[in-house]
Image (tube, rainbow, N blue to C red; front, top):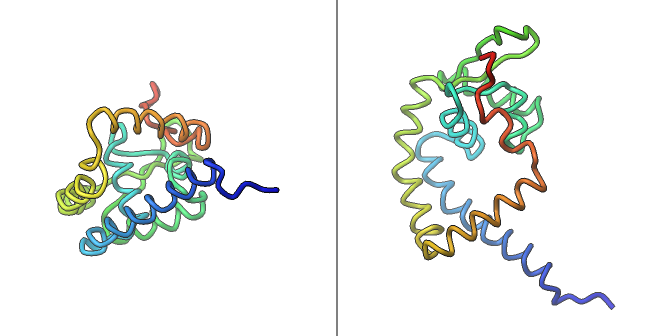
Length: 159
């Protein structure tokens, strides 16, 4: 007989419910700023990366998108002036996506509300000790299931 009350099922269910609830709460501030969830994720990853840019392949590895999916997102953000492509000086086959000043300004506009949402619905609900332990646990899980999630996070010596 399959144990339906298995704590592993409970852990996955709680994680999915918490993520879904948080995404619903934060989606509204992104939409008010004219951004989708993936637009925000792309812009914040670029803004937090060395040189405020990432190779397109690293951006795909860091997000939930395929390489063709990240190309479509970057194409759209480029048309809006929020991102620009830059050629890689050491590899003609590669290119970078870089956040523009307009992209940075869009992030600056949405971040105060996004941070307030995070505080209200996530980090503010946990004690500092709980938050530290939770972040450690999330990093352990993330590193196991998405080992490329930090691809390009460190500037290479050739850049």
